[in-house]
Amino acid sequence: MYTILRTTVATLILTLTSLTLQAHPIHVSVVNLEYLPDSNRIDFSVQLCADDLEKIINYEYHTLLTFHNRSRLTTQEQDALERYIQANFSIQAKGILPSRLHSWGLDEGQVRLYFSCLSPLTVDSLVVSNTFMITYFPDQVNLLISHFKNTETGVEFNKGTTLQTIVFK
Image (tube, rainbow, N blue to C red):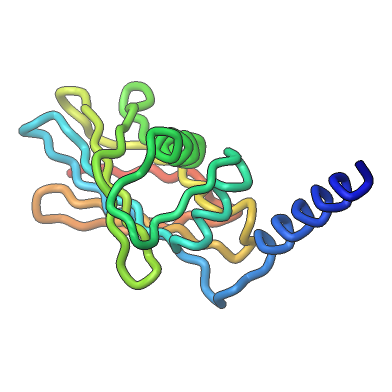
């Protein structure tokens, strides 16, 4: 019994330590968002450090997620990943727009997640909330680049600014 308790405590300490250690000097995510009014859709991709995201999903959702050396996620992994994204990223236009993960890719340690959501018939602006990894990395910066027609707009999210409005002209 004592050995099991000691092993559990040691595992918990290692997990918490690995989450708080900053293994790389810069913590940045990038969201590319495209409003497609002709198809009443918003597509967006989220680019995050794969190792950091795996640790967070493993810790918060008790799911051993890994992106390396594979092409598909299990249903449990995808559900945990979508729950994390929905808890830390939302798009509002006349209400919150639910999104669904439809694919992902891994490139040089960065995972890119691809989502789509239906939009109302007309959208003049979006209110976006983005708290990716801010709880774990105080220096985390989350960038969002929106694309509409021939215009790109960039906004930044961080520990002090987690809500931004994007206006489409």
